[in-house]
Length: 132
Image (cartoon, rainbow, N blue to C red; front, side, top):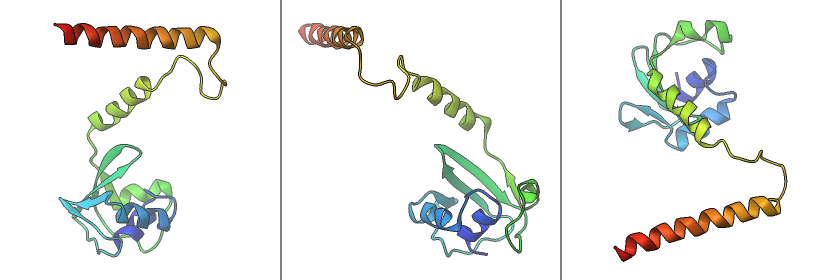
């Protein structure tokens, strides 16, 4: 079975064209080899799929005849992704937490002053390090 079709059948991608594009972009690997969408996969193969900033590691158990329901997907594929990958994603979410909510508009005068003050102190730190 083609790798793009397999990933679509076991519901790792919503559409087959999205799975095909992921293969073309080099986000699907078999070992160290980047797979083309038409590459055949077999039971026992271990795939690495990069999706949503997580490197999923999948072991193919069996090949489905067609797309399967979400509850049946684990019959055909075993997810062996380490927990550290998901923990890194959680840390990434916290690092992107900003002072202002997205879409609240332009910064207020107070926000602007705080931003300018922060940049001024950062520049002073850099100048102090250069002088030493």
